[in-house]
Image (cartoon, rainbow, N blue to C red; front, side, top):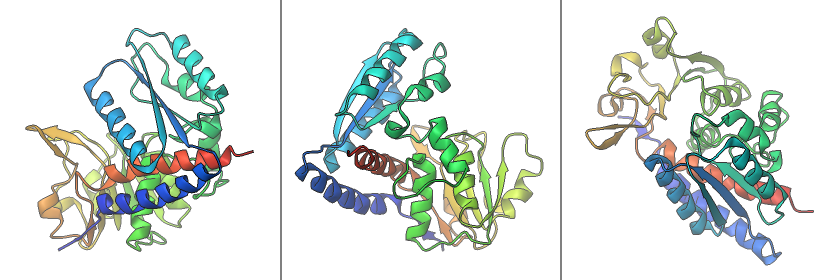
Length: 287
């Protein structure tokens, strides 16, 4: 039976550490502050923002949410970002994705000052990652990939020399995560919807990361994983009103060495790494 990679418990411990560090900053008159921009009224996005607000409150981060209507123009969003860039009391800026189709998300992300880009998606921060010109403990890295690495580190799972297969090629997960694994001396394969022989690729993985989120259309079954592998489930789907991941958890946990649950695995780690990024951003802006 697999060891369950408990992201929920680790995130709670990390929150205590973050709260202690924030308390020290507050003694110096600095309150780390996150500004979140929410465009439109998608229920899922509003829920995510509420969770982030709650997380911030738990560790002592000041949270400000700016809600714009779905019909807001790209220029209006960019003007708000520019105002927040210039606000010295705001240390982190997060634009809740996805944005309405009328707004170019790339241009919006590029409008955020790199030192306030707590999602780690600005080209400057992405460039530092791909040039290996970053420090894991001080630079702003994408939250889900850094959360996965932090979780594996906690359980002393060393990717060096391992075959890592990532089923996702997005800018949020697959691409940055592949670089973090490369920097830890893994051999990395990225798979996606056009990959041939996906089952064989997945079964070759010592560490398998799945981030598809299209159940029941796509599910990783036990015959797709190697005996004794590490399986990280990033996908989130709603089936019959229940939250589930990308893997057949009950069967796979009997075959592999380590596996993340859903919920309670990667999700809490993603959210806590956002808090960590706000802390890093605040520290980086101390003059």
